[in-house]
Length: 251
Image (cartoon, rainbow, N blue to C red; front, side, top):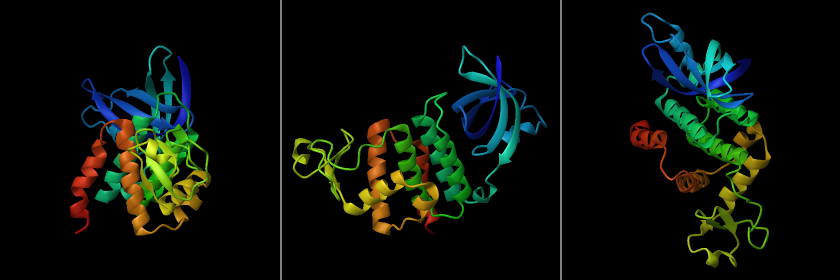
């Protein structure tokens, strides 16, 4: 078995037998990984705390060639993103980022930009509005994995567009002339389209500074929720939880 070392952010954990954990990571080098960590759930054993959700670790693992479950031999904390952990809305949003990344990524499919996106989002989650950061996260993630559709013009006739119609079923942007052929196509206004285009073509620091009205933020939230539901076929558990606690957060 080859020995590998990488930085990796914990996406989820699950107990395995009486003392071990199966941990899903997103790594900077190898993409999503699943690792078995032995002996971390024994009484008075503190190593289990290292594998807390959303923690950025330096890990060493034995890579198994006939399984996607590798054996983690060493781990140390690189960044715990402690500033976000005392706020319920931040924890709920962090859970959403982790679940969405897990559901949309494949094991052993390297995407350094996704690791950087997770790291950036967790670093700034306590300082930035979670809703604004969520839209950036969704658009950047979906663009990186190839789910975000062509947004520069009409997919049918290639006409350039400042606003248009979007078919959730087909995942396509359409002009007014081509939209009638897609009965499910709904209007997509100028501002949300401009934000998505800007996010696609600019880095994280520039994107988070891009101005956006509250109405555009709401329009993007509706758009991304509908698009993800169409692609995933079900709502995310973390999103359902966030919607349930939203009334409490607004008090």
